[in-house]
Every structure is written in C-alpha cells, then in structure tokens.
Image (cartoon, rainbow, N blue to C red; front, side, top):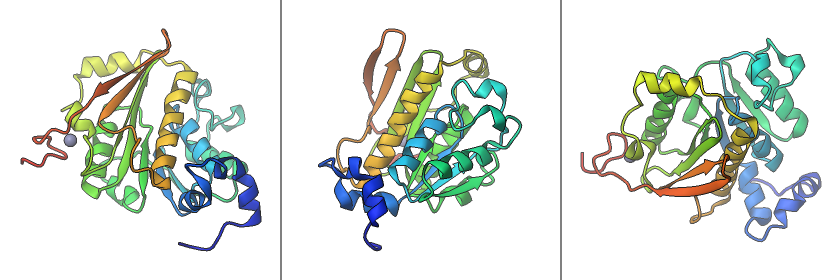
Length: 254
Ligand code: ZN
C-alpha cells in the first residue's frame, strides 16, 4: 500500500475514518481504488458525487451525451450553465471542485461493445448508471468476463431496483433477467418519467456498495438479492436471486 494519509486527508475524511467499520486503512483503500461510473445521469450523478466526496482515488466517467434542460431535475452533477456542454465535462468540473484529490478520467462516448472492455479493464468496481437495457446487459457480460464487481440499478417513475454482482461469487444480472425485455416494454419505460429523488436514493446505494467493496467488506454486499424500492408507498423489499448454473454469462454448467 502507498504512503500514509496526509493531514489534510485525515481532516477531510475524519467523519468516515471515525466509523469503526472503516477507519484509516479503509480510507487508504478508497484512495487507491478505481471506480468506473457508466452514465453521468440520474444514477451516475449522485453516485459519482458521493464517491468523489468519500475520496475514491480515481473516478472514470463514461457518457457521450450533452447536458439538456430536461436533465437537470435529476442529474445533479450538472448546472443550468452547463446546458449544451458534454456531460463528462461538467461532471469532471463538479467532482474536481468538490474534491481536488480525486483523479477524474472522462470518456466522452457511449459505452458499447466496441470500447467497453478497453474502458472497463483497469477499474476495480463499476457503477452501472446506464439508462437502457442493451448497456445493462453489456455491462453485466463484460464485468463477469473481466472479473470486475459492479452494482446494477434501474429506475422508472417512483420505483428503483439495485443489485451488486461479484463475478464468480454471486448471481449476475443475467441469472435474474435472461434477455432484454421486448421493444414495446422498453419504449414504455423510456416514456414513463422519473422523480429525481428516487434516482438519488438508488444512485446513493450504488455509491455505498462501491465504498463497501473497496473498503474490503466481505459480507453485507447487496449480492444474490435484488432490492426493490417503491417510493410511492415508501417500501423496500428484496427478491432472492440464485446463481443459475446455465446462465449464459456466469454459468458453470456450460
Ligand atoms: Zn449469471
């Protein structure tokens, strides 16, 4: 492990260093950690903000879009003056302003089959904040193949879902959902809207999972269960997910 924390770092992170389950050693692991956030949108914004604030050493941000007025209701990395600018640019500026200690790597592109493995390969953990099923399945398949732990999430209207995958140890996204839903269902989702604070709750859970993973929490990750958040009735429930030996991504029987 690299050198000790500086006096300034000890002060900046003092409130989390005080947490008995974390402490100085965990803080050094966070400083040496690399997290890739896919999408600087409704999920990626709160996730990246909390990860930068927590002192993750390197944050990668992938997004090929530009900031639009209709993004600002939930994508809290961006401000009104950023409209028309690449999201990765305003994300990097916001995160660096919050914590100059964090090295922000930007990828101004859509995460797809042509670039996904090259972008993801050097990261320790992936926060999947993508907004479409094709990317969610791609993130799963690539992360499983490369052995990178990740946190999946999805949000629609007043609902969210989230699950962590540790390849080789826990069930993957494809163990739960074999294939993307039919096109009409996808269109339905995209036209459904989302409350910003719901995205904030789920993205913040993703950041918590990334911190826990990097800090070395062996147990307690959101693995082998999908957490479903119903904001309308303010209820959380869990769906047990079993590893499928015939899963096309992580199966051991094929
Ligand atoms: Zn699987």
